[in-house]
Amino acid sequence: MYRVLFSRASRLIALIPLLLVSTLPYFAHAQDKPYFVTYSQDMEEPGNLEIETKTALAQPNGGNRYGALATELEYGVKAWWTTELYLDGQTTANESTIPTGFRWENRFRILMQEHLINPVLYVEFENISGADKTMLEVVGHDGESDLATTNAEGREEHEHEGELKLILSSNVHDWNISENFIAEKNLGHDPWEFGYAVAASRPLATIYRDCTFCVQKLTAGVEAYGGLGDVWALTMRDTSHYIAPVIGWDLPGRSRLTFSPGFGLTDTSLDRVYRVGFAVEIPGFGRQLQEGIR
Amino acid sequence: MKRRISIALGCLSLVFALAAGGARASHWQDVPEKDHTRGNPMAKNCKAAVGGAAIYKDHCAHCHGADAKGDGKRAPSLKTESIRSATDGDLEWFLRQGDLRRGMPSWSSLPQAQRWQLVAYLRTLQQ
Image (cartoon, rainbow over all chains, first blue to last red; front, side, top):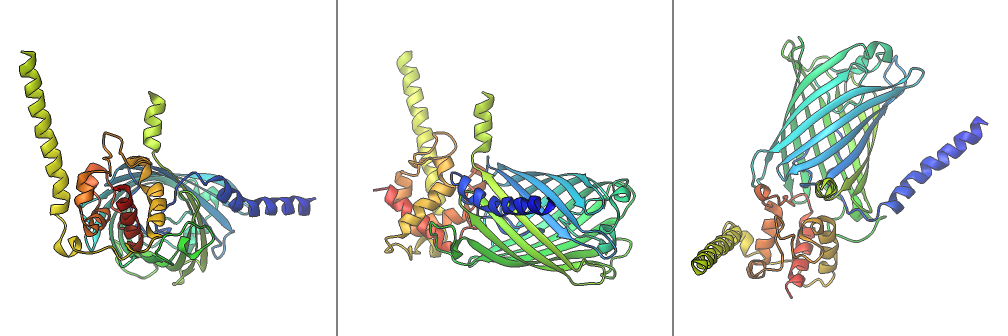
């Protein structure tokens, strides 16, 4: 019985990408970078809404396997201002499936002209529990042991945090190179924590062709991220660091599939973390909403 | 009295039209010389405009309209004397820069070859 159910489920899962490819042709095509942790200078186009899921799959030493899902709603308020709402949750094997909170972030392009390095200011408020495992950033002394905490323990811990990022990003000869400097503060008694993320990527072919299964639709790159300690212990000791190749596939329509296997570089890092993302962009969402209200 | 009002309104419209024309012209005045004189390396590629049309449909049409005539409000028409008078280099530069204050995103995230494809398509719109 279970085998039959599993077989049906696996067939359904295999069909999902095909369904997505075939049912989204009326959306246009996305051009965002395939990063999971690093932000680039790309802003959401004004009035567009992007819905994206970012899943992290891992198993910490001494803990259970988990899958953490962040669902992101990204809206272009202005060409220089993007706002995003994240809804987080996770499921841990042999434990439970729980929501873990929300994040609200805003990104502001500081300079209105394109330069060799383009700074973007990122401001975020997080209201998440200690059971959050989405790993959308790694700061301070975040480590594998935090991710091995049981859901019962983790959900008791409530974190209200403010986060600032300075995003520096360049588009040079079809390469994107981005660096993020992160400062995060628990609004309670904890100290400021610091982290970084850097990434580079390039489309595998640069001339546009109307196709789906071709290199023109693939962007490949690598990102690295980790913690830099906190104001009480501004040291690299007991910090986690990861390196992760990334690949993005622009599907027909403004949709995109991304994948990244991440590898821990220190004892306190997870050995491996696999990330899968899927994004759909709805052009002119703001305008449609306004017309709907009228 | 009515005549005076219509003359005043006419003058006001002329002033706004000239100001708008001046603002449009200033897009190209800001273009650095090396970008201004740059030719489109894909101009002789007959497929460039076809690719450019697809890029336009994906990224530009929902603001500027499928017919590139704009929405009469924020998104201007792309079939104007200002676009016709611009060099290929001016247009590629403007696509890369955008005009963030007025809602036009920067397309520096597009590969440069695709920006040239888009320029090739914009040229076909002027014919």
